[in-house]
Amino acid sequence: MRVDFAKHFSVDRTWRWDRVKAQATLCHVTLAVTNGENILVKRVFEACMRMDDLAQRGAAGGQSIKRFLDVKPGPSVGFGAIDPSQSQRGNGIASTNQMDVESELETSRNSFVGHSQSCSMLPTSILTFLFATTTAVAADYSRWGQYLDFPNITSIETTLTTGSERYLEIRYGPDSKLQSFTITPDLTLDGLQLPDSLQSFKLNRVQLKAIPSNFRWPASLQAIDLSSNNLTDIPKDVPWPTKLTSLYEVLSDNQLQACSPNMPSTLKDLDLGSNKLTSIRACNWPASLEKLSLSSNPLKVLSKSQKWPKQLKQLEMSNTQLQHVPSTFPDSVEQLTLNYNQIAYFPKKLPASLFTLGLSHNTITVLPSALDKFSALTAIELNNNKIAALPEGLKLAKGFRMLYLSNNKLAALPTNTDWIKQISYTLQLDGNLLTSLPPNAVFPDETNVAHNQIKVLKDISLPKKINLSENPIETVSRVTILPGSLWQTDDVTLKSFSIDQASLEALQGMTGGYSFSSFRWKTDASSVKTACDADHGTVQTVGDNNLSVCVVPSSQSPQPTYPNDDNSY
Image (cartoon, rainbow, N blue to C red; front, side, top):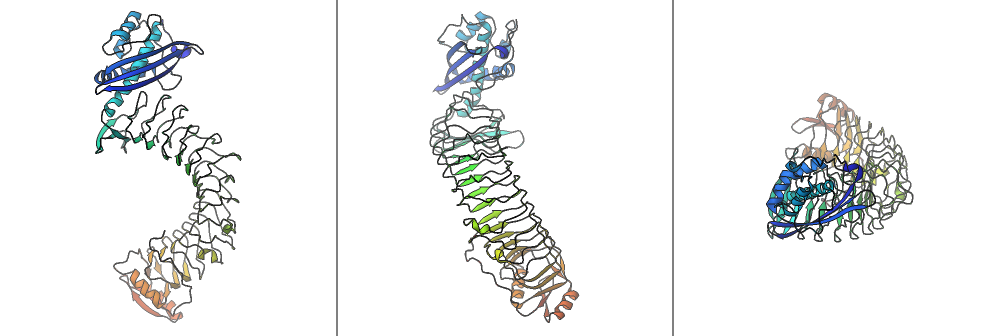
């Protein structure tokens, strides 16, 4: 006779392990077998096994049992068909003869003693399954036993891996001694009771599929990391440690389809990135949450009634398929990252406290001119959009620091350059279609205009740190060079190069042997002399490359001012 349990029965199983002495473990196993609504049998086993017996049973039978029954954690366990007419003793499963089953359960030197109920009334096939499942539990724990057999364990962590190899590091004792093990990438938490002394638990890239419903975290835990696994949900009856303040990068890169329930009320950081969340409407955020990452989830749209933690300061929602910026973000948010989405328009409303906005890798084509209405905003990232022009009357907020416009479609900058003066530190314009820079503009200390089509630099004061590489520059006319400049240029040949005396001295310092500049310009001496004569200047030679430079009277280009703090961003 062949019985297919998968069609008729489901199994609820829980277990608890207690270390009773150095080499022995007490196991309490509860197994409930049901056929739909009715519990057919509920058994509680207790067994005292030596660790070497556990290891022997795990090695000899545990893996075979798992392959035979396809045991999976969770309320419903799938398993294959069992043929009671065939003895399975060879692969670790008890014989299906009822007397043999009872003998295995009652008297085997490797098995269980002191059962609370008699086995005689149970169907042979169910007894076979109970014994097999219990043995599988022992096999799971036997794998952890060797890792936990140390005093005062404070840390259990997987380390960086190469190829298919996985390593587990155990730190223990007052001196934080280290023991390392090679593991297979299929560890489970089944049957595991973590030591009360544990402070850090990190289990990455081991294909972990579930946290058992009866699992318990030690109250002493300060750090948990289960990222880069295959978790699909977090059981409601597995509370996180109450003192835990961070779940950042703990649950990222899994297969979660819903928010983690029962999050600690003290939680400040939470990372649910790279999962399968399609909605966060039902998420019950801790009021204390300050940092939240939902990046790389297929959210697409947020509900207009979406609720957020009132103290939220940093929100990351990159690569979530958003098509517009929601207006429901709390005013407490200071950093908002929405890169790699499908956002086509710059938002009309932003949180009042926002000072950093990330909108790179979207499809924005136009910027509003009145960006100064966002009074707290000091940095905007708009790299890799489709912006073809900036508004002529562009205004930025007071104290604005950084504007990133790399890899757009800008062919020219507004003739009114007041907006450039408002940027105190960084302007990124590389990867556009610029052919020139506006005259008399005062650029911020760090400016990048690489990978454009600039041919002429004229009547302009260039900043100390500027990247001019990948431009077909031919003419540099009456440009101001500041002392201590660190430029990055390409190996191009200039036909005209005119500067004043102060700039000549700065250029000599920049092309000297101790300069960190990547200054690679060359000059066509004949062309420079012709242009210099027309400009009523004097040709001088500078540097090891014998640059021909035309020195002209001091220009009236405006001189920029920079912060005195050398450690500034």
